[in-house]
Length: 161
Image (cartoon, one colour):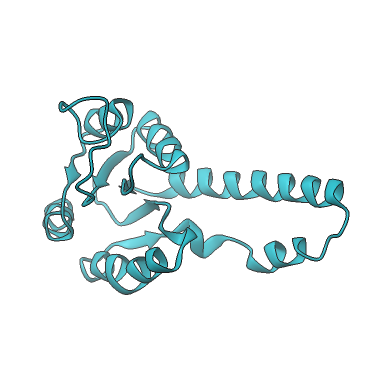
């Protein structure tokens, strides 16, 4: 099977440094290898998010945000389904819960999942895994691996392509 589309599961779009790394380093490196990167942060309807800020009534804002959250969740599910594989960024003291969910869903649908974790802090139940044991299990069970540096990740992705 040819791998062309990669869904990028990651919490990096939530902060400025992460967005910089995604846009200026990780995504261009993957595109240079010939992958089409599906970054869910690029698909968020920014105008709708901005419109929420103008809603004064808290119950109405809560309802509309709940609806938008479900739309975003569905978009992400569909994006995972139309991808050939998932690349999960596992940085931080604990794997982001959304990223962990995307790893599990992707593995459950038969997608290969590759992990990327350059963070040197301990983030697992014991020394047998580098992240939460369930997250690492699903990555390895899918046929994937976890790269511990950007260079290692790019080399691994080059072998996959």
